[in-house]
Length: 364
Figure 1: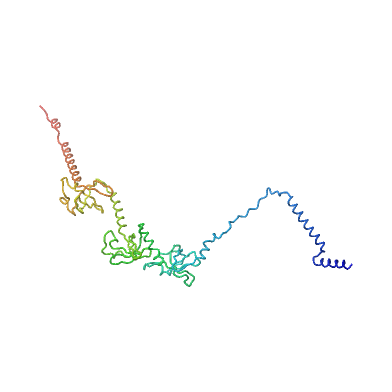
Figure 2 (figure 1 turned 30 degrees about the vertical axis):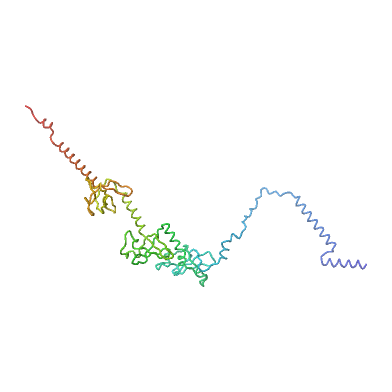
């Protein structure tokens, strides 16, 4: 009896704690398990839902999974270390009279002070540097105190410009710039930030005795000598001027027609003939065999330098002009003969003919 009362007491306590007697708990759990199994069976046996006529919900776009490669540039930039002397390239995002600021695709922008832009004493930053330009410069300090990487374009020029100049020489690149300084033997022109020298003998087609007129003049030159070790850069305008002169001369020659008679001046005498200036900077060859009908040993027998002569242009070919005095004389002689013959014919036609005379005679 005592044992039964003890069990009853335990059940009451359990009911207070769990809300129901242990036996009832077991029954409830069993019932819940049965309900769960029945629901699973019903779901398996249920027919597929008819979705005909219903719009399917749009599928969400599948985005490609992100990888470390997607952030490669950013990661490399964040881990990249820079040191004084490194060469960096960037885009100009701001420029004023004190210098330029560059976007280096790095954690900090770069700054080039105006005094570190060029070795050319006549360099103008506002004329030569613009927003959007790509510049190469050397790191001189990792932090200028304002969070910028301090750069020097002058130092980069010293490192890179000589290689560029060597390539310009090999490729015959034409460089146009302003002469900023004159010395006794020539003129100074800066190319890629390097001081270049143009000798007086290469400023023009002929040696320039007085080069004072070239100061601040814009000229086109080619690089003809590069010596980094000796810090020597030699430039020349002569070859370009010569090529231009030949082109212009050929254009003038193309307008000359064989058969024309021109007056010229004997420039020089050679064993094989005379060179005659026929005007507009054009010279033709008067061969010794074309000077006279008579055979002569040397042009000086008939001609002298500076003498004015009339010649016939006999041929224009490959930029060369052939002249002849003999052909002109022969042509003039034939023309004179033709004129005399024509004059004789005209005179005969105007004279009373024998028939006319006989017609007027009356016989008795």
